Amino acid sequence: MVGLHVYPNPAQGEAIIVSDDTRNRITSLSISDLSGKVFATDLALPCSEYRLALEGLASGIYFLIVEINGKSKYHEKLVVGTGN
Image (cartoon, rainbow, N blue to C red; front, top):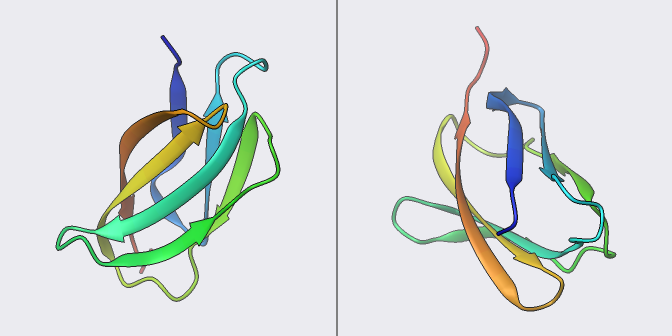
């Protein structure tokens, strides 16, 4: 089983998505809100660490859909805050 970590969470400005095994490569990533509206999709270069820019996203709860090695999909919750 692939282990994914999203940090910081809650996040401001940028979130980092990391696979705990460098053989497991992030090959695409989407971010959507609770209603299912997709805000961004990136067909990332295969990497084990991905930096996701969050500018333009309102504070709230989002879902990341991360594809590993072009086939397995994992869902992670991400909280975006404004950081008063």
